[in-house]
Length: 94
Length: 102
Image (tube, rainbow over all chains, first blue to last red):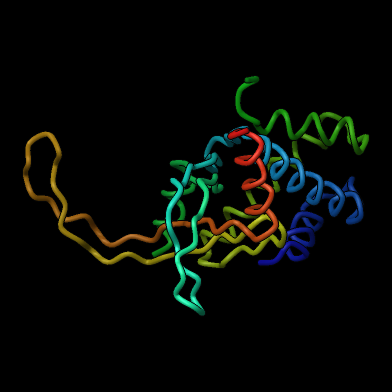
């Protein structure tokens, strides 16, 4: 399912909101979630999961072409932990 | 630190920025997460460009242990959700690390 399919599916379940409104809402939600993560905040949605940042230690990597060592700085990466309802529902589908 | 972002905050955002009424805003946020969950439940990958992909992985049974008793118990086969952040989100989050270390 892509973003535009998500917008369509939400629109089908909404009779008050136009699909344009749904599109704006979906884009705004994703933009806001990105912005919060990018400023170091967590996101917690019960039954869905939580997003947070994980720290990656600085390390020496390699340039894949030349094999030369490259110093890589420590960095943060986004991390998602599925919530209980999400885990259970996905697992029941096996 | 103001605490984590929740569904209530997202509904508030739709109310303030898009002029949705409170009930519409709350419902939209609910349906947004529910449709993603439903897709994943149907073993369908979810790709939200600019944000990231929710993928499904089937794990086979593996040996496990009760950490308290040390007793061996097999961990059953299961399907799990993983999130792979998109390039754009990764780059924005890395920029945060830069501002923090200075």
